[in-house]
Amino acid sequence: LPDTAALQQLDAAHYLHPFTDHAALAQQGARVMVRGDGIYLWDSEGRKVLDAMSGLWCVNVGYGRRSITEAVARQMDTLPFYNSFFNTTTIPAVQLAAKLAQLAPPGFHHVFYTGSGSEANDTNVRMVRRYWDLQGQPERTVIISRRNAYHGSTMAGASLGGMTGMHVQGGLPIPGIVHIEQPHYLEHGAGMTAEEFGVHAASWLEERIRELGPDKVAAFIGEPVQGAGGVIIPPSTYWPEIGRICDKYDVLLIADEVITGFGRLGRWFASELYGIRPDLITFAKGVTSGYIPLGGVLVGDRVANVLRRGGDFNHGFTYSGHPVACAAALENIRILEEEGLVERVANDTGPYLKARFATLATHPLVGTADSAGFMAGLNLVKRKAATVHYQVRFDPVLRVGMLCRAHMFDNGIIMRAVGDRMIIAPPLVMTRAQIDEMVDRIRYCLDLTQAELKA
Ligand code: PLP
Image (cartoon, rainbow, N blue to C red; front, top):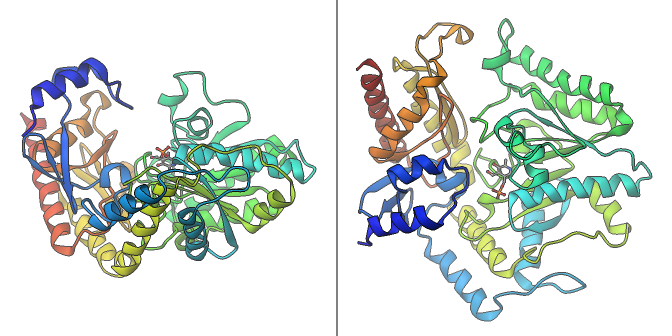
């Protein structure tokens, strides 16, 4: 086994981690992950942990897939890098583009590659502005997003995102990006049915478009299900109504499917599930199951045809269409298809997870437990009530979510805490037996959390 203490010392001395409180990290020492297989990870002390978050929502086919390693190695041997600027291309980049066009919803035949989801959302900003320029409406520049959304960490990505904690650092959002409230039934839906609330929440978009003036609005962006915001599943009426409003005011619709793409909700793209008819789709993560970084924008015909007629689009990254990343994506997609993982989530393990996860709502600490496909979340509450809007929350200073997360982490399961909401997004390879194991483990750690709160 590696020398954990020495690694932790080097880590604390030299590594500035993303989204990490370094004072706390220095005290505890980082947990060093060394190996993965299927849905499990092992740390440098040999402890096994069930990764219910698929890394960062990305390891859809699970860890340790030798065939991806081999596809990557073959491509590295043949051609480790070439770009697709200035009239060149590579075989994996072309093959993947064609494959993505085949998997995408109707009306999508083109892809623009990036290295990450953040870069892909920056690309969206530039692309929609370029589109409206070419359409002779250059004043259409504003993009409307939602509070508590996550769209990445670049300047435009973090601005599109609606996380207050990110906006206060660095004076975001950048000009031209505004936010409306999120379709969060528990937070804002008291006194309404979920369906009524969905239409109501969509009306906030129409209000904002009218305030700004429709001729100023370029696009609306949203995650089909908000991920990092806490797995916020919208009512079924929300997206169809958003679509109607975008059509009415001729506003482009961007679906950020960085988390929801590639099977997580039992469809290749969740837009199909929710009746979203986007003009642009952001993807990353699950396209390679995170084995190699890759992201991009699927560009619908409406935008692609204008851009293709418009001469140079002065935008691109060294690693746009990186051949090794594209080779990893092709093999990852082949695995998803061969093992029928998307259909399995839709028809078998997804419904099973829903039923098993819902049983956690009987736990005294749990107010609600809901899921969509392989994304799920539960709310920790101080006092339950029959009506979800009347449940009593813990005082935030208690940081009950973090307590719970620590018990999970120490007892062999990784869940994420968003305030007092505990969320999961497991690898799509998770079996029924492993779902049982996960739910049992969560229940056990909820017991430990409850015991600690009582003590
Ligand atoms: N969009 C969504 C919905 C995400 O969840 C993320 C990352 O979590 C991003 C964009 C940013 O992707 P990346 O971290 O690859 O830049």
